[in-house]
Amino acid sequence: MADDNQNPVFQIQRVYLKDLSLEQPNSPQILLEQVQPQVDINLGLGAAPIAEGVYEVTVTATVTTKLADKVLFLVEAKQAGIFEIRNIPEEQLQAIIGIACPGIVYPYLRAIVSDVCTRAGFPPVLLSEVNFQAMFEAQQAQAAQPNQANGPAIITSSH
Image (cartoon, rainbow, N blue to C red; front, side):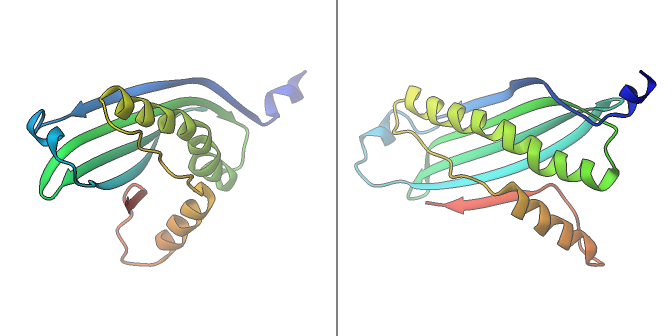
């Protein structure tokens, strides 16, 4: 039985919406415009230990939609997951936290952003698929270079 305590553990404890905001600062006047808006999407990742062998992983999306220089709407959503991860070597632990966990949380975030846009009276904003493995590898490569600032992972796209 003692050997069971050394088996690798990776379990989802909970997936939840941590933060959500919607702003329409120029409504209702701007809603009368018939111009195609510009959509900017920023994604961020975060991870923090919350107990021994338990981690919270967050994926944040900020969607800013503008007509010319006026904001049509702004959505910020942070989806989180609590994961139990034990008895895994450090190099694998970082990959699980940076690849597997965001991959589990992200589909929930995509659904929330699309739903909020629709409920606000706009066409849904569909967040594209994200290759978290490529993102993680790029972040690892950047961390290996001296004199580089290592902040949270951020993806930016414009539509």
